Length: 224
Ligand SMILES: Nc1ncnc2c1ncn2[C@@H]1O[C@H](COP(=O)(O)OP(=O)(O)OP(=O)(O)O)[C@@H](O)[C@H]1O
Ligand SMILES: [Mg+2]
Image 1 (cartoon, rainbow, N blue to C red):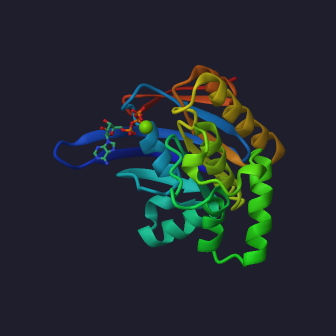
Image 2: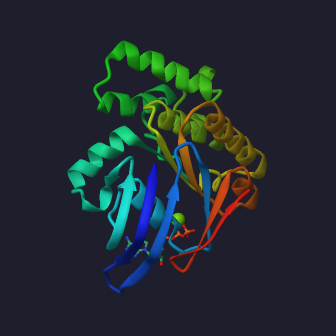
Image 3: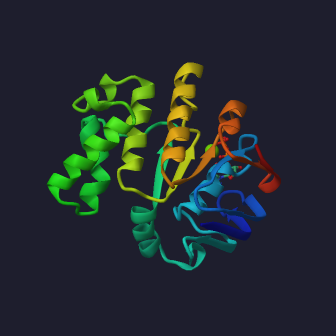
């Protein structure tokens, strides 16, 4: 599904930052993997490379048989739309759209017919346990509910790769555990590959495998 080979990422800017150095690993289709490491160790950078949001300075990032490192922004953006879904710590919902409209957004962008959009949005909201909140705006929802909307939006496209950057980072322990259980059940029901950045050891133990990043290097790869 996903293979990184000798990946390095250097950010050129006011000061040069070596965010990743010589990172190699493979993730099989259907795995649920946690990425852990201290703040600034390169976790988000790694996730952005896997999702084709950015390209490495050196090395290759193969996803679904393509080397994203060799592709231009336009073809990576097309790739993201069809193959990858993102879940962020801060939800990133559109504040003026209802829960249902937020979930529908990626389908409208993909040109899915109206009737099919409605059906798929309903199903995705049911799946995350939010059927009754479909007409609420994001600020009429709790943090945990907002994250459920974001997860429904990630599921609705049927993308094979789900990338989550600290999905429980803004939630209390109980709400966080509920979101993890939801991700876990999505993982068990479907065939999605899930890669989740987390600082939370209990979130990591909900995964099948744990990658440890330190100073931009892969220092651990363990199965739970
Ligand atoms: N766009 C950028 N330009 C320059 N440097 C960057 C950029 N993005 C990240 N960095 C630097 O790269 C390093 C890795 O950043 P990254 O965001 O991947 O860390 P992280 O492990 O996700 O940290 P956190 O747990 O705090 O989210 C950091 O030193 C950061 O300052
Ligand atoms: Mg980060």
